[in-house]
Image (tube, rainbow, N blue to C red):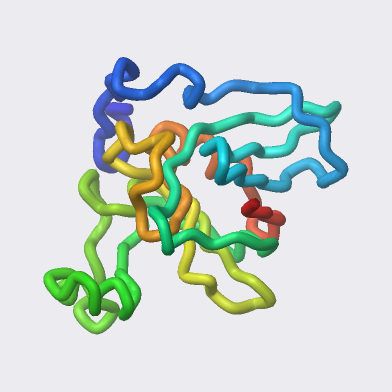
Length: 173
């Protein structure tokens, strides 16, 4: 994506199993169109479409002990977000203190852990501190390696970002 604010290099798809490539699939559900459903067992995010269809994206998820499950809403979204690691992450990895909220976070860019876009997950009006976001580490799609967020290839989060509106329901199972 050479036209992006920070030109995004092409993904080497040989490093991403084909089953995790974005595609439209048959996915009947009683959930309304626009709902996001994250299947943590299979490493997929489904964006519900009309007529029993969904757009399926491969995702990377939280490693053992860092996952979150439940129902919530996409509160807001951001293009090229600033990343501010939470205090518990800084406690585990003190070198991240330079990116704390007090220090202004990590500025947007290709190496920012939130990637090109982020969707902010709130439950009952409270920030869960979890995000659906892009990643420059596209080879982690289909793996449990993050600190709990749902990560997509940057090209896929840009596609999803265009399709999702604030207030959309998200279900992580």
